[in-house]
Image 1 (cartoon, one colour):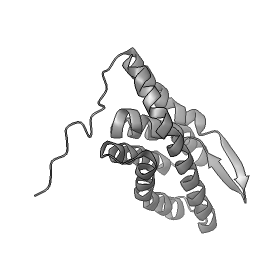
Image 2 (spheres, rainbow, N blue to C red):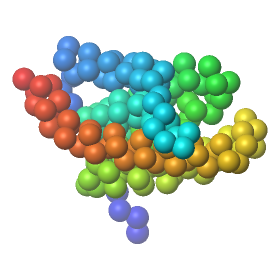
Image 3 (cartoon, one colour):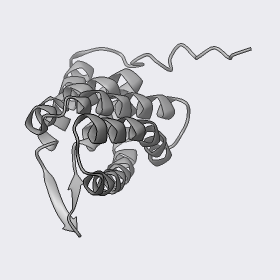
Image 4 (cartoon, helix red, strand yellow):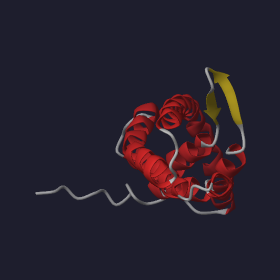
Length: 168
């Protein structure tokens, strides 16, 4: 017998008001803005910033908040890079992060699991559909893992103050 999902696992689980609506809208736009920021760190690796908004949306609003932030926050990057598959990949990352957080995982492991689910999509679409070279994809996979880990750790400490602000 398959256990039933708790009803709040997939819900937004917030009291909707101007603050919570405004914050969700900001977290949907934030990855778009952060997507234009990449910092080269070493050996050609770039630190990506867009995930911070996706992870915070997933932590505060659950799977659907993460999905909305990941999908909408990827439009500019998808357009500029000519890679529409980013929309689905980042939506998947946000949804799964929110789902694992709601299931009780801490932020960093939740993000790692979500990234493990997103990774096949990223590799298949980037290699077979966008025709990116394997060495580039390998570097991207490593850079995204490091960026995901960094922002997951940061978001872990940001969630409580944001939730406290929203409940005032």
